[in-house]
Amino acid sequence: MVPDFQEAPQPAASPEVGQVVLFTGLNWSGESHRATGTDALAQDIRRIGVPASIYRPGEWDRAVDDLLSLEPRPSAIAVYGYSAGGPAAARFAKRLGEAGVQVETLVLLEAWGSAEVACTVRLAVQYRLEPGDALSPARPQCTKVQNELIDAELAARGGGLGHLSVAVDPEVMRLVVQQLVQEGWVRRRDAGS
Image 1 (cartoon, rainbow, N blue to C red):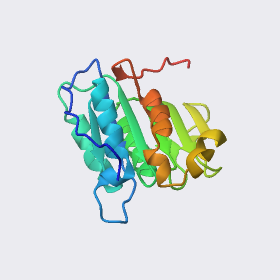
Image 2 (image 1 turned 90 degrees about the vertical axis):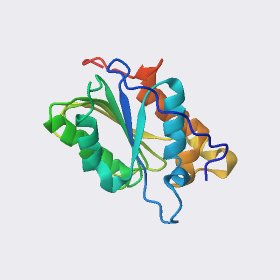
Image 3 (image 1 turned 180 degrees about the vertical axis):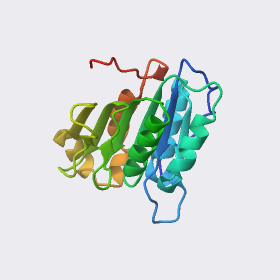
Image 4 (image 1 turned 45 degrees about the vertical axis):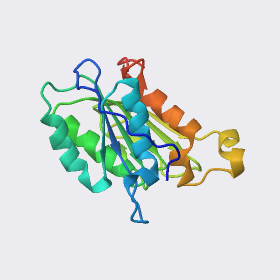
């Protein structure tokens, strides 16, 4: 369970601020999604003033429907997927692209398997503890893709990070938040960056 968990209210939706959509990992223990750290991440994002919604991996199609039904629709969307939520986040972004909606940033943490990044995603970043399946764009150079190993010094402190502990590590969560939001809105990417 995430220490010091406190519920933060969902900020009012605003087209200018954008929206963050988060996909949890699978939770084998039967506990709530708070055990994966995704809920604490959502609370951190909400405290900044950006709406953040949480879905389980199997709910990616409902997440698309929910986002497309928002009025007014957010002008900027960022997506996060942890573990089994990684492929779900990639499918979510692809389906949004098919609906004509661009995703500013797709961040995957310790995602299971490989994922193809839709060309309607401006930046895709994958964080891993060890080398593994890489993200790749749907077409060559249609989007910027970064496959990053979590800094060895960061992973080594406190006895090291594992697949479960990485999603609740404060330093790793700071990296994720920096990719998703900036100064009270969803981080927007220049087309050339």
